[in-house]
Structures are given as structure tokens and as C-alpha cells.
Image 1 (tube, rainbow, N blue to C red):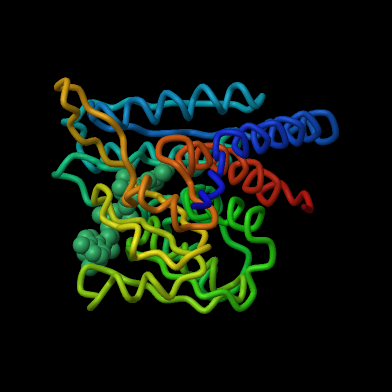
Image 2: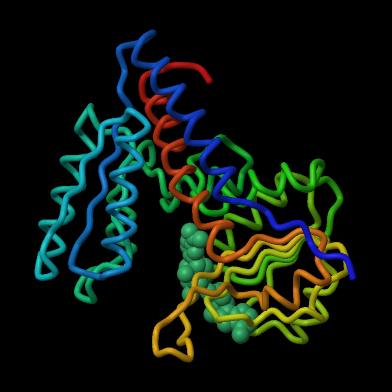
Length: 292
Ligand code: NDP
């Protein structure tokens, strides 16, 4: 039985980071501009701490300015919003994100609303979501943007393909569907109320799983030869008492059916921070009136 091509997101991300670093060097030399990214972390969520550290390290490695603001969990929402305001006004900062989740006493929606759309490198503000939906230039959520880079390389022309996105979050499923639509796919968005999800998935030439349920998508949900993008990051217990990372797709079964598939880890995950750097450079250029 033929096996799917395994899409090496790590290698794609490394190439993208090199391109970003070259563009940063160019911006410094030609325009005296150093793109800057500020990341705000509230509290001690262990996974968030790892992500935030990686973001800072990779920003610096690309030759950019990096700031990480670590605030205690008991910080008030007003204090956080005033830091966001300050960073909105800081000319050295072109990309600004607050790492989610935030503690329960804070409103995620209020925080997103406070971020300047011009610096919203996570693409979460209503302005950027609306611009994306309207076909206007927008800062687009990093993970879906990274999935599109992989898909365009693996599939080539996406026009007319049947795409199914499982998941409809503002961070992942909705922008993913909009990007596929903009690339002329015929798009279905599935979610927890979708009936006969397996049959819906089986229609997909391109299947994107962004659910957060370990190995939910089975091998027989996949159309033979389809391209499968597994966004899920789930930790499950191993027999030795430790844990391992798995996606939302049953990888072993899926790779016997699919034409190409992203592994977890090493597929979509590495693309996310690389796209964050690319978004920050794009924001820095727009804020300084530099054409693409
Ligand atoms: P959310 O929890 O915000 O959204 C999950 C979506 O999945 C919802 O729309 C929900 O439907 C849907 N869903 C839940 N259960 C089912 C089910 N049984 N059948 C069909 N649909 C279902 O998660 P995110 O979108 O933020 O993240 C999804 C996954 O992607 C997570 O594993 C997360 O860790 C991972 N992720 C990975 C990133 C990366 O860098 N690789 C970045 C971001 C996320 P409904 O709306 O009806 O509730």
C-alpha cells in the first residue's frame, strides 16, 4: 500500500525564517528599520511560557527587536490594557500579541479589542477578521497562514478543490476557511454539531483538522489521495506514565490513505512562529509606508 508524503513543517519553517531574516537585514540596511515584536504573558501557564520563550528567541534570531512582558496572574485587566495602550503607541513595536489563555478574571474579547489592528500580528481583531472576510489586505492569524503556505507548496493550484475545515474558532477554523475560500476552494466548515462528520470529511480533497480532540479523525474519514493538515496539539498518556503529543488525526491510519499529511509534532506547529515573524515584518513595512 502506498504511503502519504509526510509534510516536513520544520524544514518549511526554517526556510521561512531565513527569508524573514534576509528581509529584516534589508530593512535595516535600506530604511534603518528594525521590526519589533512585543509579547505579553499574564500568569504562569506552563505551555504558554514555552511558546512565549520560543517566540522571543526566534524573533531575536531573525535580527528583530523582541520584548516579552511577563505579568503576574493577579494583574488587573486595567493594568494589562494600559500596557497594551503603551505598546500600541511605541514606535519600536510593530507586532503586539497577548498570549492566551489569560486568567479567568480577564476578558479575552476586551483585550483583543484594545490591540491596534495595525499591530495585531495574531489577526484576531474584528478589523483584521473583517478585512480578511472582505478580501482586503489583512494581518492574518499565524497558524492558518502557515497551513496555507504548506498547502500551496504541496497541492499547487488550490482552485476548485473541495476543502473541509473541522473547527470554527476565531483563531483557527474561521480564518482557515476564509483563506481557502480566497484561494478559490469550495469550503465546508464542520464543527461539534455537524451531522455525519465522517461523510463530510470524506468529500475533502483538502482536510484541515483544528479540533483539539486526540486522533478524532480516522483513516476511513479520508478520501484516498487527499491532503491532510493536522493542526491539533494534544498531550496523551503513554504506558510508561509519561505523555506524548498527538494531533486531531489518527496519523498511522491516515497516512495509509492520504496523499500527503502533516505529522504532529513537526508539521503545522513550527510554521506558526515563523508566520508570526513574517507578520511582524509585514506590519513594520505597512506602518512605515514601505511597499511589499
Ligand atoms: P477551540 O477549542 O477554540 O475550537 C475547537 C473547534 O473544534 C470548535 O469549533 C468545536 O466546535 C470543534 N469541535 C470540538 N469537538 C468536536 C467534535 N467532536 N466534532 C467536530 N468538531 C468539534 O480550539 P482552537 O481552534 O484554538 O484549536 C484547535 C486545535 O488546534 C487544538 O488542539 C489546539 O491546541 C491546536 N492549535 C495548534 C496551533 C499550532 O500552532 N499548531 C495553534 C492554535 C491551535 P464548536 O464550535 O461547535 O464547539
